[in-house]
Length: 250
Image 1 (cartoon, rainbow, N blue to C red):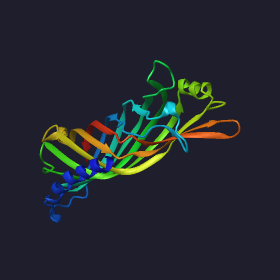
Image 2 (cartoon, rainbow, N blue to C red):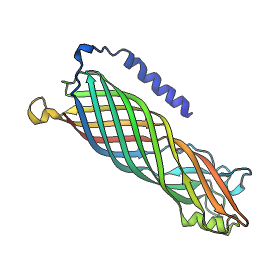
Image 3 (tube, one colour):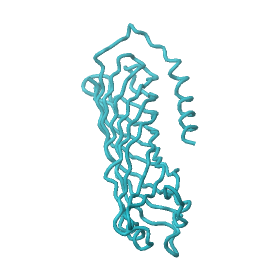
Image 4 (cartoon, rainbow, N blue to C red):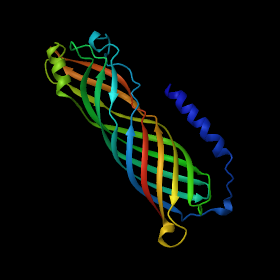
């Protein structure tokens, strides 16, 4: 499903980019945008269940993640050397996300357990195609690129820690860990210039919707007697992000 979504996204973007008529005579090495704004991150919950490396635990069988959305900040720089072409480096700061395990069978009368939390940030490199000339007030654009996502500040909630111990699975506190990922990304955005003359000509309002392919491994490591054991899951957050910001053009 993830690959299908990306294929559909790229199939939508490439025909537009292929039609762009770019003249090298319009080359401008001095046109730069700097942007600051807010990001609203909406992760996808389509992930595998939490399981043992070898044997499945019935109480965790067919569990699935419920990942809470997060809010953070973003900053980007755009180099626009040609009227319809731009290269953008975008950083989305760490957004905090809480995790709940749904379809959990460990507690009678409950179907979920608060699992823990993590923080995720991302860096994206986009090639953008602008549909209108730089002098237009409205400047919609499409972009494709690559993404690096970093997951950190991951921890288990005391509720799940107690479950591990009380169920006899663990002899002490466990640890939750997720790593990083590389993937593709795509965006649809709009810059709106505030005016044609004076200072207003240099300021733009920006809005963009971004899809990011972000997946890694989630691992819970907990002590046993003797040694230790692990639970794991494929962790595909694949977030949609809404960016709202203010752009200054040099």
